[in-house]
Image (cartoon, rainbow, N blue to C red; front, side, top):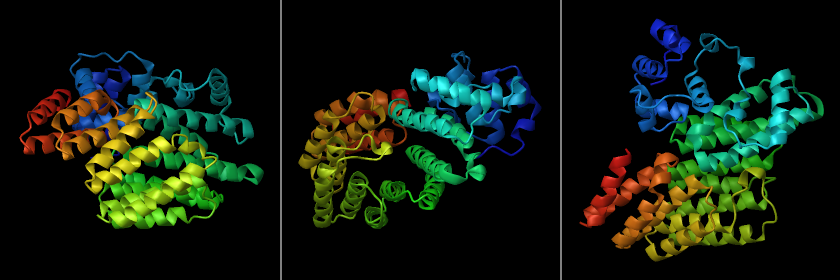
Length: 406
């Protein structure tokens, strides 16, 4: 349930905010909105056990980062905290080390004077967005989304005044922000919000003649369809993305492999592998990629091909492709390692290799709990279910490990 429009008119909630009594604030906000600890945690970038620990005073909010997450995530009126908006740090600065020292200096200057429509400000926001894309791989979307939303609002304020040679640049930057916000909503399994952001990104991409972003947005909508089990829609959106004018080879490869995964979801092995083979040829010859596809290459393609193998119950091929893909992932890609690692556990379980399935699952369990909810976490639950139905003792062991972190 979303917060009521007048939730911050409640005297008890206002008093808790004024005193920065975070346990009372969280409990009261949840009571007024009918929200669970998990729902509140998704808004402020905290796991449910952390919310519980704060509410029960087992954990104290002392860091500026957590304080800022609560303020931004719950929309705490700043006047209740005794500060003005322009006194708050630039949203990026609550994640030390995410941006370079030079970019920090630029961002501080922007905050002091306000975000202006000039090349220097847009360069700084470009660098900030790129840094947060990479940070999200490590800390997860729950932590990053409130910060990126605040930054998007800074850029969106320039839209009406954008004229001349910088106008297209502003719209392109808005398209990139919207695409990233859509991805993070999708990562938190919030399909309606994701679709809304995807539509905005696509519109801005078309407005600014940004074919690569238009194709990316369409391809990611195909991914959303795939995640909802809608293979036919996944195929059609993937094919549409691949044929978009202005798409780079890397973007086309991503779209073609999405179409292949859609065919696999439908059980059509012939078309699935035909499109996957085509995507592999494209990505092998690609010379560059747009900045938001910094991660895309042979390792990611192998892992994604492994997911198609899973749909087709080609367990040996799935295990080989997922293992190869994971071997090329940097340790910083915690969310992706959690997801593909849980898929690897699924492939072992499907093949009847219970011991290997448990080992793979336990290997990614911490990351699945901290940054891989709900998708990797849900996949590990499916693995436990498969093993339990097959009467393998490893299934109960995995179930108990999951329950201990739930």
